[in-house]
Figure 1 (cartoon, rainbow, N blue to C red):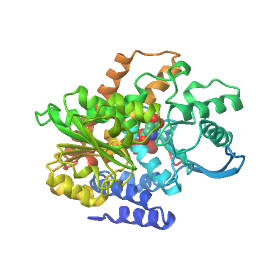
Figure 2 (cartoon, rainbow, N blue to C red):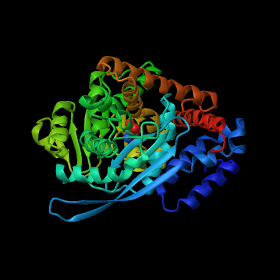
Figure 3 (tube, protein in one colour):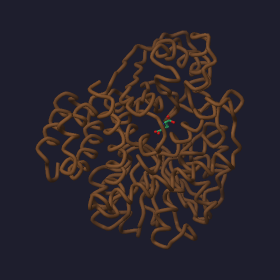
Figure 4 (cartoon, rainbow, N blue to C red):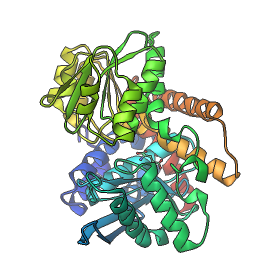
Length: 448
Ligand code: GLU
């Protein structure tokens, strides 16, 4: 830690010792603890009552076997996780990720970040995350369904609209949520819409939920531009990834007058000076479930680069929307040389610590994922509101609410950073504002 406060240093040492080998979780915890130095000086009650020490320890961690039978009749065994991190502000809330890289440390880092993100939305949701090392790539729809059913057969007993409300994340979209919710409904014999978000429109979902994370990130950046008297007009933008977050970030950048000249997947990146054709991208990724190279095959103005990094392209704004630690120190140096002035994290923790430091030193404004990608979970909370009221809002009304929430989060980050003597530091503002709301609720609820 940079200027260690003794108690925070002790807490961090304990995190390292008690969660050995969980590098991403250590990284996420350190990033928050560092921001809290000025807070604990002003408010010793948070350290006296051990709020921080309690907060770094999840309320409950569930790990379970997920056996299923593949299309060849072979039995497969995966591991399932749900980390119910904090329910101080509401039921545990956070996505489920299916990806071979998923392990306890990854789920804990995501669950920990989710606490502060959800707090920042201003809505009554606690923090949690789940997932499995199941790799959906190359699996048939039948295999995905059987896996989801097995996963939910175990997890259902830990969920509930007032207990824990999962949603999607990497590898879990509308199709998977359908199978998960279907199995939950069957086992519990309850049509409990509020137990899941990201549902389809005909079975309790909310309009704008699919678009929300990407749209929200771009609204956040629009606000960052506005405080400097700028706009998206003519700005060259890079968006890494080509999943749900990336696709709708690209769509919104174009709506606001910017131009996205590149996006990527794990196989490489496409460069398209004419601006990414979002409808074609949706067709390739959503409908065909194909690779980004196919986009370049179908689009004359685009080229596909199998080696190298998307961040090699010069841009004004970079939106990492793929996965954790995708943007490292070297990428940051290249982006800075290319003239980047804003970086906003559409994914969770996509920038390494070295990258963030390089951006800070170069005066690049950085929006942390906790704030910039909070639009997804905020719209999940709006979905819960609609479910509770047995209501269904229009696209316009829901998008208006999302926009308002994102602009509110932006302002809260800046005003909190100012209040704690760190003007312009979005990351510190997000961590402090997110923390204080949870910490005050924990103080009020007693030692539980
Ligand atoms: N997985 C998303 C996130 O990282 C959404 C979570 C949710 O809607 O509950 O915030």
